[in-house]
Amino acid sequence: MRYEVRSFQDSQQHAAAISGWQQVYDQLGAGRLRSELLLVSGERFQLFHEALDKRVVQYGQAPRQRFCVSFSTAKMPVIQGCKVGANSILMLRDGEEFMLHAPEGMAFLSLSVDIERFSRLAELELGSAQFARLAGLPGLEVPQGLLKSIKRDIFRHVAGLGQRGADTDGLHEKRIEEALMTLLLDLLLQASGERRRHELAVSSYIVRRSQELMLADPERPLSVLDLCEQLHVSRRTLQNSFQRVVGMRPVAFLRSIRLNAVRRRLMSAPAEDLTVGDVAHDLGFRHLSHFSASYHELFGEYPSETLQRA
Image 1 (cartoon, rainbow, N blue to C red):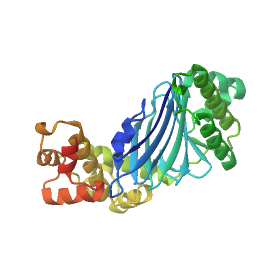
Image 2 (image 1 turned 90 degrees about the vertical axis):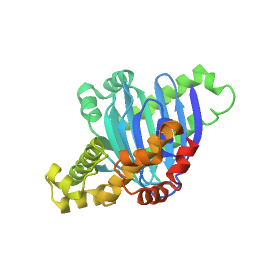
Image 3 (image 1 turned 120 degrees about the vertical axis):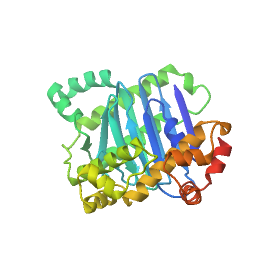
Image 4 (image 1 turned 90 degrees about the horizontal axis):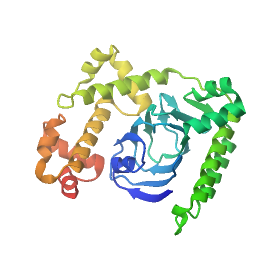
């Protein structure tokens, strides 16, 4: 069994530390990021609690062959086109894609278990039809008191795992897996009903497609009018969608995404293989002085410092 408590100053290093998740975290909030991650994983389960002090957008795929449930423990994000409330749990299944817009100070607790075993147990308790209906939803509303109780029980179960010998305790691993299974079954049993999608889902789609179009050819950044033409939406619809989902203008958001792409490239290759100017040019930044200032504003360091650390 694996147990870790770590802190990071880079959003992508934080994301990469969560095994099994094919994901990218792009930093949107300005300044040097600080994050904390508690991770516990066994052969057939994983739980992690993460907290980040800057706004980020998280997207990717959930782990394969896992049933995943997440809920916010501080600040409410937007995920899968829905605003997350204090009573919301979010569900992902077997490699399902996701996109989460996390506000500054967001904290999130995620649990994942073996999907085949969980499905068998849930069908025994709920019946096949009821489980299929609930498990197919993007999320559920449950009593807030239950969520608080689950958080308290989880931290009680993992307390002391950092002590010597806990990582090799197979019996302890089995107990934690059983506890997580039980908690997730209780969540489904007490679910209050289906969550309604609204216009935020359309806005989330527009933001996601804009990001995909921009990343498809980052050397030639798209303008607002380019995006409107390709998405067949008005300027007002585009602007309102970005404000509703990420609280930023389209140009500022997409520039932040490109800056994060620069940062990942600078950190992933030996310094002698590239220059800051080459990477910036490849991702559509033509004015190096403006690029360097924007990079420093977002990450709290200059691109040359990132390259030197890498």
